[in-house]
Every structure is written in C-alpha cells, then in structure tokens.
Length: 301
Figure 1 (cartoon, rainbow, N blue to C red):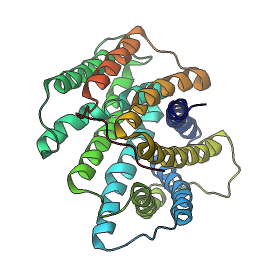
Figure 2: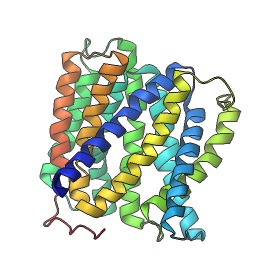
Figure 3: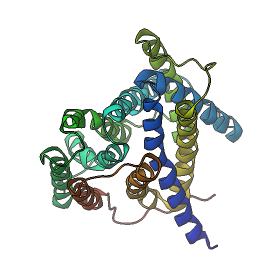
Figure 4: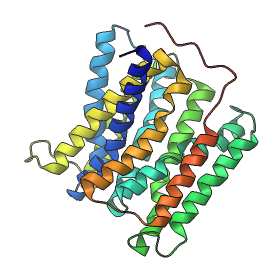
C-alpha cells in the first residue's frame, strides 16, 4: 500500500471510529446512565490513555498558570459542557440525528471566527452557514420529520455540543494553548474535566459505580472513551503527516458513519426530511471548510 493510500485508509478508520462514539453514547444512556456520570468516566478513561501516550513520548508537560488556564477552558468548552449536552440529547433524540447536527461545528465556527478576527468574511462560507441553518429548519419545521413531534424541543440541546466545539476551535486559534501540544492539552483538560464532572455526578446522583456488573451500557461507555482517545491521537498524527486541510476532511466521514452505525447497531430509520437535511448540511460543510492558498507542508515523521 502506498503512503497516500495509507493516509486515506487512516482517514477512513478515524471517521468510522469517531462516528461510532454517538451510537455507543446512545447505548450508554439507554442503560440508565446520565450526562455527568458518563462524562466523568469518559474523561478518566481517555485521560489515562492520553497520559500514557504523553509519557511514552518523553515530552515533559509544563504546568504553570497559563497552561492550567488553557486546560481549564478546554475542559469546560471542549469536554464537560458539550459532553453533557450530547449525552442529554441522546436520551431523547435518535443517535444519527445527533451525529448529523454535529456537522454544524464548522458552520457555527465561521461567524465566531469573524467576530474574533480569526478569519476574514467570505461569501461562500456565509452560504455554507445559511445552508446549515436551512438543514436544521428541515428537521424542526415539518410535522413528519421526526418519529415523535415532542423531540423538536430537544434539538437546541443537541446543538449545544457543536456550538461549544465551534467556540473551542476559535479560542485555540485566537489565544493558543500556552505551549502545550494537542495531546498534552487534551490530557490536562481530561484531568480537570474529571475534577469538575465527578462532584457534579455525585451531587446529581449520576455517579456510575465501577464495581457494578457490566452490561452493554457500561461496555459502550468504555469503548467510546478508548475510541475517542485513540482516534484523537491518530488525528494529531495525521495532521503532522498530511497537513490540517487533509485531516479536517474527517468531518464528512464522522457524520456519515455516525448515521450508518446508528442504522446498523440501533435500527434507526429517518424520514425524507432528515435525509434532505443531511444532504444540505453536507453541502454546507463543504462550503465552510477552510481553503488556504497553499496546502501546508506535512511535518517530517
């Protein structure tokens, strides 16, 4: 296999892995677990894996005030708040629909980027944002779009995660990571997220006892956390090998696989309105993807 084919294979596997985390989250909430308990164990498991990866790389992690602040911000807007939003939405909405709405991340990121001065205004990307909003309206407005009309009120809950992910990316672009590389940043954010979500889980009566018998819900949580940590590490590697413009194309695969996995594992089926929204959102996603003048040179291995 040529290196180019290997990079495309890696992109495909990453999309399949990340797309699987939404149906696994659905299985976890169907087992009776709720947002803060799930977030806590997800970040604990992911944090252990990421910590081992950081240790194996032999790069010491500085922990001054700027680094702790960066980790705290990413913990809140990149893990605890969007994670709680996604798990809450999965209680009431089909997993595939939550995956479709996650494709709004780059569309919502565009106006935030313009407001912060991270990017210049581009008409084509505004058109992508408009298509994204049209896609959401196709889900919300028609009477026959959802299996139960009462689900409509939880669509804004499902949009909490893409909104915070959009803010997270712009925060990093505007204020940086205080010298931490991506794995170090996510490891630090995972540790702080555990400190935040653990007490919240206990307070809300959502703490998951790790000594309880393990069923589908518990194994789904473990699998989701392991996949998230592994795929994130692979994403960092892929950015270094092929450049960020190539790596960001995983967004399409994550959404598509999220829908396919939900149909296969959960037996979900969607109305024509949802499929139309899916198609429009993918077009909008293509329009808002960043296109620099030149592809950045890949890093040496």
